[in-house]
Image (tube, rainbow, N blue to C red; front, top):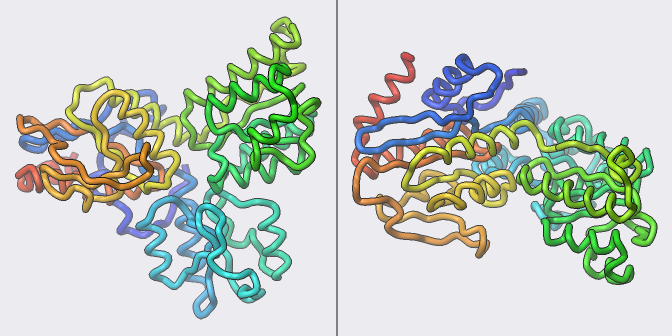
Amino acid sequence: MKSFNVPVHYRSPLVSAIKAKRKAEDKMKRDFTPTTLDIGTLQVILARHFGFCYGVENAIEIAFRAVDENPGKRIFLLSEMIHNPGVNADLIALGVRFIMDTKGKMLLDWDELTAEDVVIIPAFGTTLELEATLRSKGIDPTKYETTCPFVEKVWNRAGKIGDDGYTIVVHGKPGHEETRATFSHSKAHTPTVVVKDMEQTVLLGQYVTGAQPAEGFYRDFEGQYSAGFDVTKDLGRIGVVNQTTMLASETQAIADYLKQIITSHYSLPQERWAERFADTRDTLCYATNDNQGAVQGMLEQQADVALVIGGYNSSNTSHLAELCEQRLPTYYISDEHCLVSAQEIRHFDMHAHAEKVSTGYLPSSTPIRVMITSGASCPDALVDRVIQRLAGITGNEANFSDVMAQWQHA
């Protein structure tokens, strides 16, 4: 796989050594067992796969290159390049400005842009409508486009299915940048509707079968369907794609449910299912699959607590936290500073959508066993700093130095 030129301060000698050794031992990535670090009285159980993915490293390289290649020019990001506050802060420190926030709210007026400005398209991609707006300003949106190739793969899949006469059902978070972009690209080919979870999928199934009166669809899915969507006609043939960072098991369950609903409704034998349901397979990216699989493998071990590191608005990170919290106490943190002490932690409560402070998160007995993973937009250096901070607050600073030395000579 291609190697990217990203700022060295995002790298970690410890994590790089661990990843290199694991890769050499498991080139086909079939081993999802975690790496265990014995740091004195602290045992860190580190997921097999975590951190920067291909699409994120590609985006970072392009964004920093855009800054280097355009001295004296105004440089804008359409929105957050990735969902990592540290990386976005680094770009802001270099003078990069944001045109809108992650929800699509404008942070400046389009009239402020000129043809001399540089605009970077984020890794999530963007809508066809926003691309057209940039072109109308004389700005080429493809010059510094960081759209993840796996997101583009979903767009291509949706386009082909749509051209074959299927309506597209997008499993994703309706307000997420990537889902907004996928919706835009899909609806250019075919009627499209977004479902955010299984609950909405079950409701959509009732419109497929006619169990719900058609007029209710436009209320229940307000803002989630393409213009001109005809619920009486457009749900007769469907295909499912997804936001690439969704929970794999949920996407599969949604696809299976809709396949069962539509094939049963039309009384089709298995050999004719394709008449009504497109074979889309899974459109999650490799990193999402790898990171979720690695968490499942990590959770087969015994531990006291799990730490999941990443931006609080990161979809893929939130799903890693969801998996962990099903098995043990889990704390979703943004960086090492969230570990206030061995007794106090600041973390994100996904259910309340707010940061909170908890106490007594680490056990008093030893060894203290902590599982750690991170999202695809989290630098390895940040994982390193969290481990180092854990070692510090548990009185294992010297032991951490020993572990660092061991891995660097492994």
